[in-house]
Image (cartoon, rainbow, N blue to C red; front, side):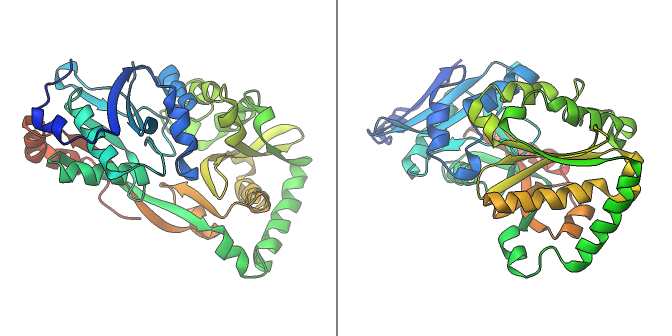
Length: 365
């Protein structure tokens, strides 16, 4: 149910900027994605639709227009008990849960976004998302300035590799790395004939089966509850299968695959946004662990990305061991945010915010 707004709220809204909440996912999502930061152009209608198909939820979309053109689109779904009237941005587990903003969006659009949102929900969860996320950072700053309660919890730190800087130091990879790689490749070949392949849009969705085959042999399949599996039926496969229905997204999805005698042995899966490559998932068959198949594959994958024009690789958070070996460094912190509209919700946030903060990760990597 929409919440009442004060007359003063309407008086302050510029006439060339309008906000509305529409049922379902708005077609304007793709328009804003194309007009936004290149790093966020995967946040398309198809991305959110895949999340709804895989994880459920009835979406609405906050749409803000400026001079009759959409400049902000924020899909949201109900979060928690209905009585709380909370919402969250839908998405997959990674890279992050953000929303679209056009590069030409003005400050007035943020204020109207918050005013409109306050008429429909008590609060909004944004995240996990980077501190440097342009859309989230702008909305969070505007929320603070307009009396919203803002609380966050730490998730971890992202890791990234400045590929342009790394390759400026010749040779790259280092000769010692090349020697190690040749050594491991020689012994890997004792298990069968290795084949190194790079998969792109025409490979989907069929190639997800090969990635899932590797995951089924990996440590995560045997040492966890399997909910973190990316390309299996009991993991997140449904999301990726739905996402590639959008040909623009399918063109962004890439993978490197190693097979031994035709059997999948290691993979790396990425989202390619141009200058920036998101390293989404990688895994390998532990039978070949002694010969570092994952690392061998990823060195090849980085060389292929460099040839396509990639300047930076983002690994997100998590295991830092292999990332350090490759040359990645700690980058932006990742947090989970809750914005609570002015009034009782914001007051509740001030009183109970410590519980949310304590549920986060407290050690920096």
